[in-house]
Length: 330
Image (cartoon, rainbow, N blue to C red):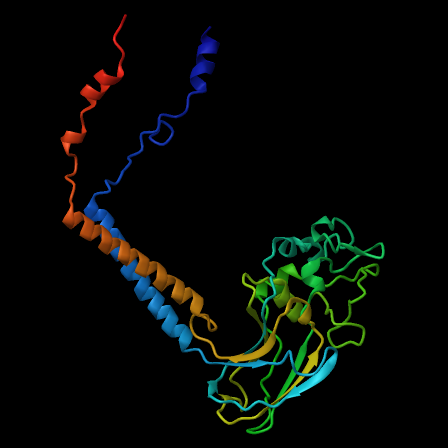
């Protein structure tokens, strides 16, 4: 009997405020003053933050050069644009695609992270559906993302003001991707009809540890997006692109965008403390802030024109209501 009693008491939770649900709690009373104040303060903060973000984004300079109509597919195209504004170093080079939905659920899921880490390269590829194999052989790398890789290449020179001696295609991917997530496999059975070095003659798909491949594998959330291709840091004699400079851009046009009515462009851009040019975030903050301000002002007017007393007892007539709803005993 004593053993049973001790076992019963041993299963009791400790007598603490957390486990006995005695924690102090606070439930806000949503009076008109607090509701209106919250809307106005949040709206004002959002408008201020959005304005700062938008002004910062608009201070980023961009030069966008569309090239999808230059030459045909699998040809080399040459453009000679003239720079119309100063771009101080460092200058970042992006390629931009439109109408390409990398955020499609089936597209995003079609990859194998274990395979990209050189783990189980030829097995467990069901996540790569519908591109886990080709001609009965496991694909490496498999999946829709890897096998739709952006294969255009760019070679940029400056015909005025000297050569671009700081052009580099390294350090464009995340350091965590280079160290942990993408490792090239030495498995001799790894097969892909498009697999070859980026500079090799056998196809446009690079090795897994190529930084351009890593950048492509980070899918974009919107159908119009930019991805980093190269950097031009401030070093040697390069201090930036100057107004009037003429560029000679040679493009290996290999990525077909006609199937989805897309467009291709090369973008030269500066950056800010927030990154590249993106007006969406600042605009979204301002829109939300304006909506909050409008609601706050509307509630303030409503409270002043037709106020309602807090805790008005004329609406608290539960005794009469209870008598009316209870049927008399028979």
